[in-house]
Image (cartoon, rainbow, N blue to C red; front, side, top):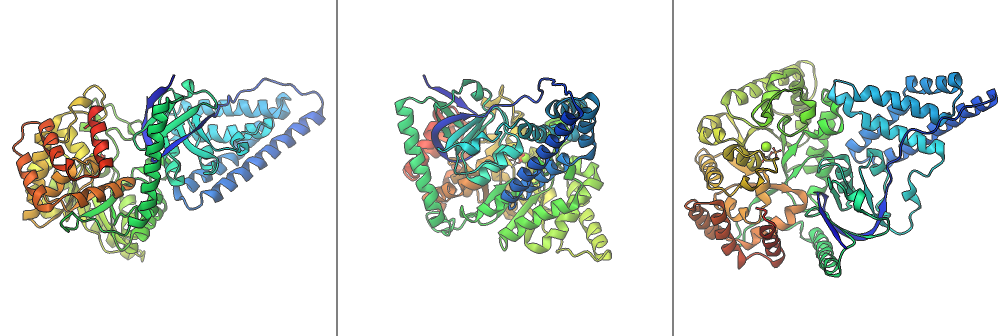
Amino acid sequence: MSVRLSGTPASPGVSIGPAFLLDVEEIRVMKKELGSDGEVEQELRRFHKALEETRNELELISEQVSDIIEGKQLIEVHILLLNDPSMISDVEHRIRGERVSAEYAVSRVLYDVLERFDSMKDPYLRNRSVDVRDVGRRVMANLLGTEREALKNIRNPVILVSRDLDPSQTAGLSRRQLLGIVTDLGGSTSHTAILARSMGIPAVVGLGDVAEYAVPGQTVIIDGIHGNVILDPEEDQLEYYSELKKRYNLAEAEIALNSENPAVTGDGVPVELSANIEFSQEADQVGRFGGRGVGLFRTEFIRLLAPEMEDDEEFHFRAYSHVLKTIAPDPVIIRTLDLGGDKFLDSIPTLERNPFLGWRAIRICLDRPEKFGVQLRALLRAARFGNERIMLPMITDQFQILRVRSMLEEIAGQLDRAGIRRGEIPPLGIMVETPAAVIALDHLLPHADFVSIGTNDLTQYTLAVDRGSPYVSNLFDPFHPAVVRQIEMAAGRCRESEKWIGICGQMASDPLAIPLLIGFGINELSVPITLIPDVKEMLKAIRMNEVRELAAESLMMESGEQIRSFILKYVESRYPEIILDEIHRDREDGGS
Ligand code: PEP
Ligand code: MG
């Protein structure tokens, strides 16, 4: 009987194929004592040979991912760990002193190191244990002679099912052997997700218990667009997803052809359509999907991939320069670190009961000017490589913008005095994501060069509904009149002050929201890269004079559901069937 699971869509596309279960190997092995000195010497040689093999493997992976800045960085950290002299000498001591086999010595040293990591107070260091474990498993596999990457031997491509994947495992995978990846753990910004996306392999993560249910060889369907996975599908499910796969692949092929088409409404009004990105290498895909700029670069990735790099100006600089050069001459809106709330909560030492109302985003940045200064310096230095704009998250008060502006001026002066090249101070914009910012926008606008509405947070803060809580998710409704009216208010204020306004929350790619947002006069929609072609289709289907009226009428409606049904009636005669199917399926599933 088929099993349907839903998780987090991590890399788009549809795949159907046989399951390959990747075991999570245990590190500890049985103790084996050695007899003669000759045996001890032989174990030492085996250990060094395994180190050498592991080094070669990692270097090979590093070459394979050389165009992915963050992936390469990660493998370099692994090579550093592998070469750590104190770990190497600990293993040698154990082999010599305790006269035990190389695998036993390695397993004991790893066990001790991991225990030390797990008990560390510093959450960044504690998180590094995943890298130590990964490197350790590689050395172990080389010692035990097991072909750790049994995947290498696979002739027919498979769907990889695993509890979790180590970063370097994912980096070493090849597109020819893999139809897709599904894992129990991980989120859309986990390493697996990033690398799957960059390889163009569909992936769904955070499934909870897929590794438990899956049977080797059984047929698996992955729907990386919506985050669904079906094990042992029924005939009708196979039919439906084969069709979806065909349509997706056709759409993919058309993407290349249509990417040059401009984003315009049916009556020829141009709309700026840009991409939300989370990792610098994603910038390479924006043009391919027909985007014309980056409307939101969430720089939190630094905390995810390399927390220890947060203070490394060069790391920031390289990432920003890459995106700016790739997207130039189109604009790139780089948002300063938005930590706190639900993002990297573990790494923010806080006892707050309501982290979303606490030390978050711009508040953290302004309280840690040295760390924030590193990001601002890198932004100023990178600005000369493209069309950069800086955006501040969660602004509620004008002093926050003024403080950042004066920091930027001060840092620009320091760079000039030190003879370090930089660009002009870029336009400084704000995210409008609280009712405070909307209601007092007239006091913020004189200090901000542009605005982008973060509808995810605006909905959460307006309706007092935690955006991550499953208990109140039925109340999280961006179409609620209180949210919709605020979007209209913000757009109106910006129009009066002749300030540019975009939307970068999830609402910007919602088929039902698009007529509304365009009707309110929003200048730009910033959406996940893979949705750009769909949004272009939706824009083509609507008319400016009609959606203006529609938006005005929606302000009179009494509930989110009324607004949605009202817009649905309008788009039903206009949107392509594939998009209408999606809207209907979402409504059946109870989604908004
Ligand atoms: C938002 O709040 O809508 C937004 C775009 O920011 P994030 O989702 O990163 O909080
Ligand atoms: Mg936000």
